[in-house]
Image (cartoon, rainbow, N blue to C red; front, side, top):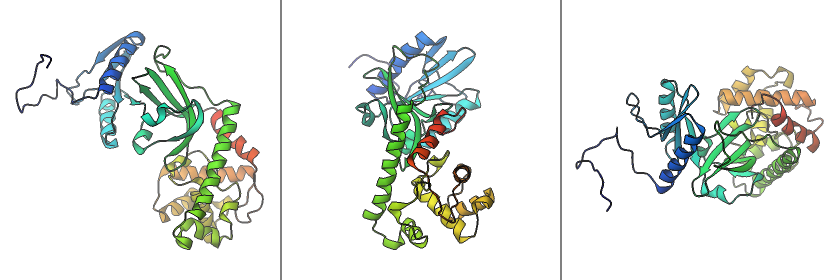
Length: 333
């Protein structure tokens, strides 16, 4: 055993020693320390903030900012992350959380793809314009940063986005920002989204075990719609739709059903109506209200009348809509 200092038996000393750390955490923290030594004015390793009883992995001084850096290798309660972040902000510092690149992502090719993000991993997402939602991770073994950018939610824990990597030797600070999707990238977004939409609609029939008790199929039945032949304007990835965990087809069809049952036309659909619709489904939230109103505005823009189910949009129209989300300045994916 290597000679070392130790606590007296059964004594704790949280202000001077960190909890047990994995090899990944120690290695990544050391690499990031050396990185910030090159790219920041000053960096401290595990400084202790007595007033918070907190110890970030690193504290970076850049210009007039002091930035706590947390390199997270294990899953912890989201409430702990939020509490620690709130503590830093209470003393005027905005923390940066960097997730250790999950093993499930290591072998994925670069480019547009489908990414499964757990509830924990989603809390590392940042929103920036014009890149939209971005997940930045770091892999100590390869010393590479992995970017998952321009992400938008489809259903459950699945997102469409762009994966790119950057060697730590080429990284800068503040961290390099990913490029917006190219024309070719955006065409892949549309193709993947439509494929996932078709898979969702097929699965609701083929894998359904509730029969007519399934709310989605029951609504289709009452509105006399064939699930696999829903018009393309039902199931549109509008801004804010990531507030819903279900597929866009599901919550948008339920909104149409509410409007039909209560005689609410598209022209009269207000925030009050949206709140009543969400309250009936026990899903009230400002972000979901925003998504519903964004969907209303989309239908207005393409001239769709939900009551008559007259008219439709084509793949070209949907592609233009998806492209606009990423190419418009100040977008909010």
